[in-house]
Length: 253
Image (cartoon, rainbow, N blue to C red; front, side, top):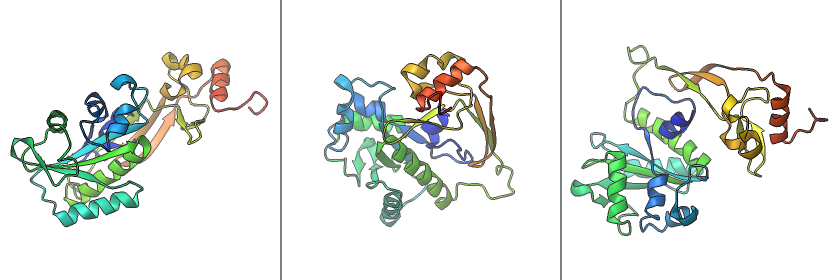
């Protein structure tokens, strides 16, 4: 699950084509925002600039579009419009030139050479590539980037046609979180309240519910979940702890 979210932005990825996401949050934090005003507030949210995995409610991601796939200014404007329709503030981008310099980017004038070079390296950027960025609230960034990747895959003709040998791509998505957090900070069951948490995560129910993984298994084909199941929770004491996390009292249960 975590790998799927990091690489594709959702838990049912279509892996028949590339354009994988590049996670840049840690890099941006380590560079203190790298001179980019829009990124500096995000970096400052981490104590003393130290990146801690349990903190990122805001993230930074990129997609590298190889130079062989030409996108005009009109094309990128349409991509930005698409992102705004999904709730994003816009779509930051950068054209990578020889030597790693950026053009056609709102970041180009202020970004430090060190962070720019680090981003290029993380993305594997080459001369002529286009980098597309999203940053902000994690859930929104993941959703926007997942849909942007799929849109680009279709637009650039990267998804195999139905009936070709590469058309079927099955995978299992495992180890998802047991809970998801509501806007008000409360917790809800991500699947159902009777899903068994990982044995090694039971102690986290009282201290860090967001880090509790569960025994659920989803079968995905070409970006669609086609089957799924989970191991049921049969321990009444652990079940009581799960209820407590989501705010259910003994009387309610």
